[in-house]
Image 1: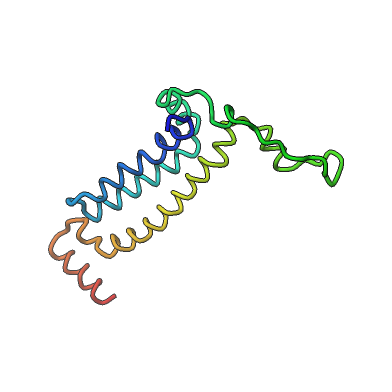
Image 2: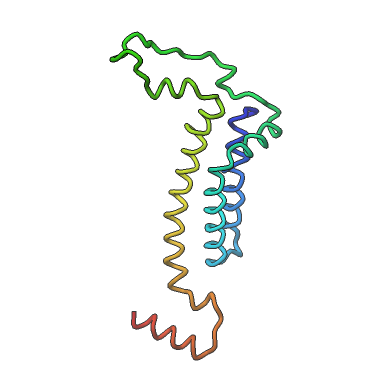
Length: 156
C-alpha cells in the first residue's frame, strides 16, 4: 500500500470519487445537487489528465516513496533478434525509453482517467434527462409560469 503508484491513484481519482459517492448516497440528497456533484466530478477528472506531475508530487509526500515499483523490480528484457528490417523501431522501443513515471502516466493514469470519464458521461446523460424533465421544480417561478410549464409537460 505504501507505493508511489497507489498514492497517485488514491490521492488522484479515488479520493474524490469516494467523497462524491458518499455525498450522493446521503439520505438528504436531491436530484439537482446530485447532478451538480456529477458535473463537478466530471470537470475535476477532466482537468486531472493534464496535471499528472502535481499528483505525482503529492503522492511522493503522502507515501514517503520516491521511486516507482518498476524502478525497484527486476526488468524483463525481450528477445530482439528477430526484427523484420534493419533499424526497425517498435512501440516496445518507445516504451523502453520512457521513464517509469511516464510509463505509469500513459499505461495507468490516463487509462483510469478515461474510463472514469466514460462512466461519468453515461451517468450525467441519465441525470440530465431526468433533471430537464423536472426543470420546473429547480427554478421557482410565478404560479402562471408553473401552470404553463406543466401544461407543456403534459402535452409533450
